[in-house]
Length: 291
Ligand code: ARG
Image (cartoon, rainbow, N blue to C red; front, top):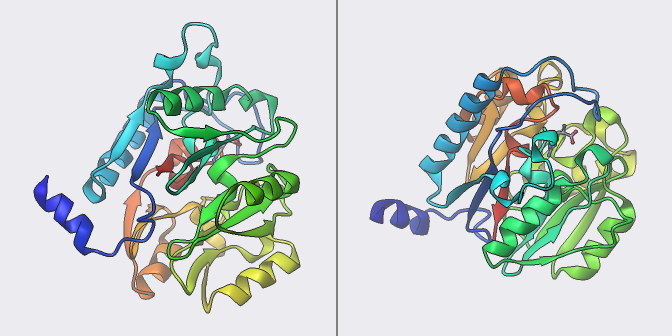
């Protein structure tokens, strides 16, 4: 415990405006509707549990505050959580705001609409401040919000799931610079499947996911852009996750992109998200940072 604590203090961590990570367990994970082009196939329940557990375990090696919530304990028998196969993707349930709390999501598709209720219950129970935005605006939490690891700035995606108006609302609500990025294809339906800022001057991205103005914005903001390799695009290479300074979690099949990251000085940690890819998600969708 003590050494882990010390390690946390001595390494200068990006994202140190957040205290830990939250996961939501995959008890009811499945693929039985299609709201993004990746969704297909049948889920191996045992495999999804085992992949998810290994990821949580690996996160615990690098952070002492990794929590896993069982949303069913907040179900109160009324809301039929067993009909919500995507609740494992907790990244979409809210956006954390440093030193403040969370802004709750409003899901774009009716299939996922009941999900943020569970997050809200968890956050309430744990004494977090939770704010909401107008329920007529779609806002999919960290799926479309990526905090800059070293600046008081957040990049926000809109155009496919999250409404631009919702981004404007968030901008009014928080004390940080908001940079809007317009998404333009269903393949890259969330910002977190095509963009991951890694530091002051570096980010991973997929240029064709963005409108030309937004791609330009990214190109102007970072000197060193690491493009996801073509062969890794279908397997969520863009959904890699910086979890502490210079350390990136990425699915093990994305060898080409992982190699690029290592040649830029990053350490890569390889995880297996094969089952979750059947729903259109990989490692970055499976957790939410908590303030
Ligand atoms: N099936 C889910 C959806 O389409 C996957 C969400 C993945 N999460 C993410 N942050 N990209 O909404």
